[in-house]
Length: 495
Image (tube, rainbow, N blue to C red; front, side, top):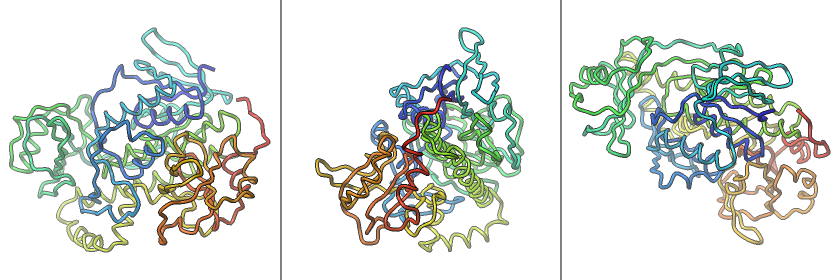
């Protein structure tokens, strides 16, 4: 084996997955066709849930000072994300190029082997491993790994070659995206619906302005080259009446509203994550964030299989947990597209939804959907409000020092929080200490209305989701530990 896992694609999903695997000591090779990052930033900022994920891995400090905001939208209708109590605010102006740079530095620091100018040509899954044919600077050669993960984007070579079914709807329109210097335009951060379409304006660092232009009635084109800035400026003038042709384009791109999702996220030893598994209108900046969270869900599970201690069916939960998330993503982005990009015939629906958003429960529902904070996995029955949900930040006071639930997840391991100094609880979990950190600490600053109020213990998966809590879980602790962290008596399995 050249590596336990080969990842195709050094975008956000591939780099995040590489880092997650290296946290667990798994040898990983990342193949990237491009010689260097393009510097283009289709994604901008990250959602509250991705802020939490990065914080749980100790990554936020790498980004320096981040501009955040509670203001968001759903289909162009303003939504106050401040209704999500105890959550991070969303990052608004971090270009995807910066996110990729920081993730690559992190993965490389952990020992990931990232090979640029290496294009995956073909592969064979023989049941015992995956043989990969690669074209690199030294020519064509073959690599072998236990698993192959396609993080190679919406036009994924791996998805097509492996025969994944990718149903959905084709694009019905074309939109322009341009980063431009030399413009002095009033920001329209959540966009503006105009008689002929929609425009969005966002300031970026370095005096750059992000423009998005959608002119209704513009059919999608089969382009082999990006659109020209002249096309963008002409559409802008038709929609707004203003002239931006004097601007200096940094880069220009076009995209559509195609909506597709694979029917399965895994076929044998080949898996998909990110845009390889789902494409959609980039409404609310959800695409990159969902891709990163795909990687965090998959990473620890794939590492557990490679390292030989995964319980039966653990890797199957990658599909069963993330496919519904992707399906819901496609649903909400299609709904937002109809609200935002349709003509005056949709105005009555916009008006009704604008009224509904003034109700706190509706705002909380929409904010939770777009931010990813609403995600609930099926981890078993019980009455505790956090079962299957992400673990919120919890300050902890231990015998030696203060810490937090967030800091305890930096290592990418499971965590059992004993919040009442229960020796019997710790004894019952001791056999799983190879994969679960058992921490005794007192919670600090838990309000009476918090879902953690009155909680005696919490089992947190490496991806930050609660797998068991007391009181409130119907399964007992050893059952939950064995379900997610395997039989402690089992040895390493050779793959």
